Image 1 (tube, one colour):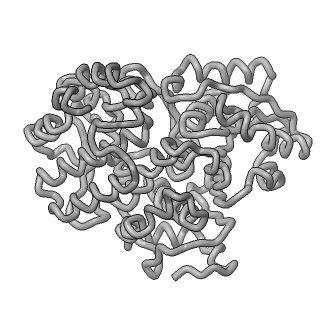
Image 2 (tube, one colour; image 1 turned 45 degrees about the vertical axis):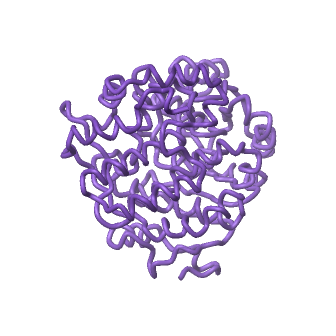
Image 3 (cartoon, helix red, strand yellow; image 1 turned 90 degrees about the vertical axis):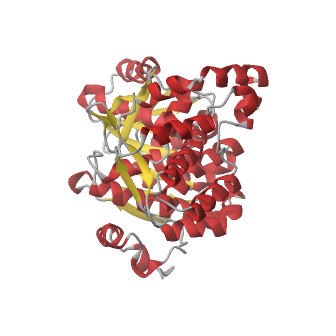
Length: 421
C-alpha cells in the first residue's frame, strides 16, 4: 500500500507506467491513496510534464510561474469561470513580472468552434504575443481543448498551461495533449496532439461546479475502472456516494487515480495508434448523441455515460461479457446520476419537454449510424468500437462486431421519442 510520507510522493512515473502496462494495477494492488498536494508526471521524454493535484493551488503563484519562461501570458477563459478565478491567476502572474492579457469566450460545447477559437488568435495578434509567450487555459474541457489548439497553431506553436476547473477536465481532457474544436458533422474533427507545460488541478475550484457538470465528469472516472483498472472500479462502487458529496479525500483519490491511468496510457501511445483508443469507451456512441441532438443539449460526460451503457449492451449481446458484469456497470452508472439511455432530465428541463421530444424524434437510427461513421476511429471505411471483453478491467478495439447486434442495440435506445419521455 502506498504510504502518506514524502517518499511515496517521489515514486517515479516510470515504475508506475511499467506496473500499469504489465499488471494493470499499482505495485501492491493499492487503490487507497491520499496525500495533498500530489504530483505525477506524464512521461514523454523531453516533452514530459507534471500534473499537480491539490487544494488552493491557484493561490500558489510561484508554482505556476516557474513553468512560464516568458514575460507575456494570455489567459483563455469563459464567461462563467473567468469572473471566479481569472483575477487570482492574473495577480499571481503579475507578481512575477509577467504581463498578462485575457480573452473570455462564451461558455458551452456549442461554442467549441473554429470561429470562436480564432478569437484567441485575434487577441494574441492584437497583443503582439511572440513565440515565447504562454497561453493559459483556465476552464473546463472546452476551454482546454480550444486554447490548446490555438496554442498549437499560433506561430506554429507556443507553450500553454492547463488549469482545469471541472472534474471532466481534471480527470481526462486536460491530460494527454488532445486539442481540438468541433465541426458541425463531427466532434473534435479539427485539432492536433499538443502537450501542455503542466496541468494544475485545484480541487477547490470544484466547489463552484454545478451538480450537472460534476456528474458529467464522473463518466470519465468510471471509464478508467472499466477499461484497465478493476480495483479502481471496485473503489468507485464503494465510494461513489462520498465522491458525489465532493469529499476532499475521495476527490483527490479519484482524480489522482484517473490521471495515473491516463498518464500511463498516453506514455505508452501518445498519438492513439493503439491502446490509447480504449480511452474512448462509450465515446463513439456519445459523440453521435451530442451531434445528433445538437451540441450543448447534452453535456459531453452525460453522452459518454449513455455511450458506456450502449457499449456495455453491445458487449453483452456479442457474448464478450456476462450479465453480472453488465448489471454492475449499469448500477454504478445509475448511482452516479448519469443517464443510461436517451432519457436525460437535465437536458429535458433545459430545452423543454416538447422541444426535447422533437429532438429525439429526429435522431433516427440511420442518422445515428451516419454520425457514428464520422468517428475518428473509422479506418478504411470500417468503424472500430471500444468494447468490454472478459473480466472487469479489460477492453478491446475491434471492427469484428456483428452489425445486426449493433442495430439491435440502437433499436433498444432509439425508440419513438414519445416512449422516451
